[in-house]
Length: 321
Image (cartoon, rainbow, N blue to C red):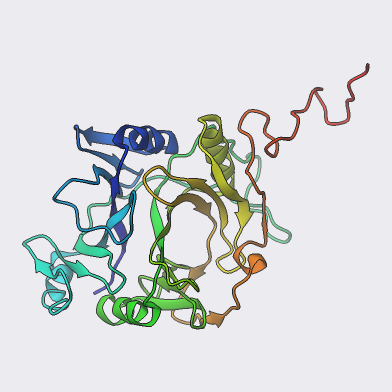
């Protein structure tokens, strides 16, 4: 049994209409909505469900305010789903239905496992020409006016129960350790072969439990930039970025999310195999971000926030009094 990745994330929110506008600007396709909920899809069919926080069908919140209520993970076949039956027995909130199994993890987050409904998609990033390897010939790199996320790539939670939550995902769902902050954080991936992490658990000194961010995979670094500048033009606030993570090598851009906590565009993360050996890191600002732009890039001036836009046709031009 191998978890393939995230199938769906479910938010409980306090302002549904604002969240609908945000996720449409973010580049997701709204496939349905009514007075209490809206459903969006990424390019490959990964789902974002946004529901009124008072909806009685939602799992209980593990923190106050708008936040994530459930993460659905996918497996490839019905046989693999059936192999999980009984696996969560004794866990809080344990349930089994014809098409899903699930429970509440030790951090208080509802999880659900279903057979994947995601589809193959023709989405290709631009290759990079690096010294010694020319992959792009007679082909300029793309410029994106906005992003269209391929899928939900990972989720990050603050936890007050790191060791038990880490053990839960490794023992019951087969997650693999990629890297760690010893005693403070764990980067976990769904399977031996895959992207650097599908889940990151971080223990804060104050013992806070909650959502840190949900991350959406885009094609390449150019889509991180193009998507981020579009979101900036739409009036949404940058938390940090663009920037680059040393631990996973990914380029990122974080925004404040009206559905809860933060949301991220990212691309170009490390791909790992069973031969990978987890590394230990000491938490710190330069470990989190090798470099980052505080306040983001203004989508209109195409410069760092508060910087003046260029006035001439060429960078060398100067305005004469």
